[in-house]
Image (cartoon, rainbow, N blue to C red; front, side, top):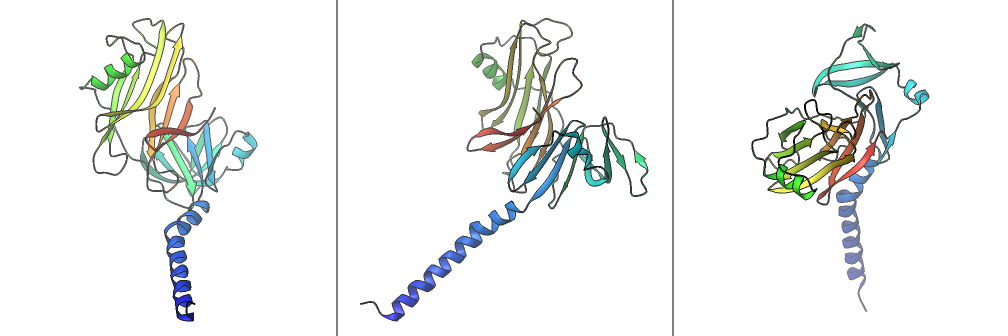
Amino acid sequence: MPSKKVYLTLIIIMVVFGLVMFLAFGVGNIRQENLESTIIVGDNTTWTYQKMKWVYVRKSSMIDQLNWTKFHVYENDFEVGNYYLWHDDKWYFFDEKKQAKSFNGKLFAYSSNYVMEPLSFQEEEVTDYSSVYHVLQENGFSTSSQLSSLYKVSLDYDGDKEKEDFYIVSNAFPFDFEADVTFSFAYMVDDGEIYMLYQDISHNNGYNGCKPFYHSFVDTNSDGTYEIILSCGRYSADDQVDMLYQFQKGEFKLLISNQ
């Protein structure tokens, strides 16, 4: 029969193991569950994050509740300061003295109990067409297809100190040619592998579909990994489509959109 000393040792081991597991996983989960934020993308998209869930704020009455709330404001991925926001047909910005400020660039703003820092990036010319040709052929299009948008963004998305390339390939809304089938692709190339982020194929003419662009790369939920805000515009439509993606288990998952 085991002695009391053996029982005591087993109890201590179990307590220590439980404490280690709590510190390793429980503390992180509790912290994540307590994170709260409101994100504004452009003039038409407001998302909230609470209890590890995203919600699209649709009702104007709920957006009105954000009036005169202070937000961290970024214009074209650069922080411009903390401002009070007020919404009518668009967002307006006011400083501490309630003096209006003008912003004309790409807007990202947040109010939260944690810090977000969008990565700055620039659109670059594509010189290696191997992934472009692969994506076109895989979707049944010729490698000589005329394009209305082709560029890449290079940045360290996953924190491995190596840059990943994010491409935009589209023939939507052409000015000097016609397309019977409109396509748009957004994807990442990492170590030679292609990971599709977004694709849209529309028939009839080149004025269908939704032309994508990278809006922001930002850690929206403070988990140490970046999410991607991908936006796209429709022809003759003022309101853009905004989508939030996360890379999970080798593929991009759509977390939320404004649709």
